[in-house]
Figure 1 (cartoon, one colour):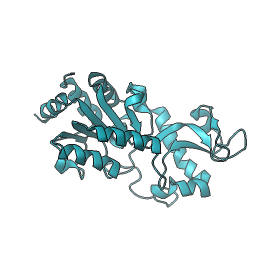
Figure 2 (figure 1 turned 180 degrees about the vertical axis):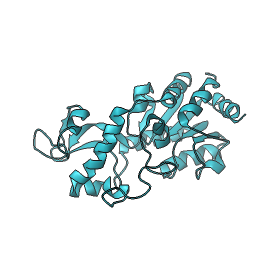
Figure 3 (figure 1 turned 180 degrees about the horizontal axis):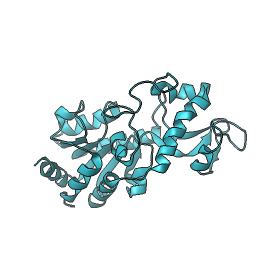
Length: 254
């Protein structure tokens, strides 16, 4: 069985990089941007691609428009909970002290499910807390209260526009997270587990290529094949929450 083959590959690995994307949180009810069932495969209701509406330039030029979609994401995250897949990953990290999570998601579900913060790289940031684009002050008010007010949310000190610490389209990835990822990739991984992402970014493709070139294992969990699927030892097609729960049950600790 493929699930047994995948479990054997991960059981024999000491250092594992777990890469997660929107397909994992989709099982919590959050929309994906692209791929199967992607909410924003077309244009938004404002006639703009989501890549434009949720971009750094739009936040600066038309913060109310950008915040319309930021708030939509924020409310969805606040109404949802981590699913069995997030808890399975946290359990895998408990069993494997050398297992790291690299996530594209900004919902904070890995932290809430118990993934150790010191082995978690949130490459696209987190939704809260917000900070002022004018004076830089961090706003400690809870996100739900800010989303209930007129948008965009404003700074209490200088009335500047607040923003979340997330990477919008056309913005650079955070240096701290990139450095942490590069340090771990240089140390090397024995296996990579890719979950719920189309894997179209260089920071995903590079560690995958490095592991494969070094003879390590690649396991992919996705609803459909991606561009890295031909490289995978095993492609487990199905809902991430279901597949990961089954997979971790078959993985032994060191």
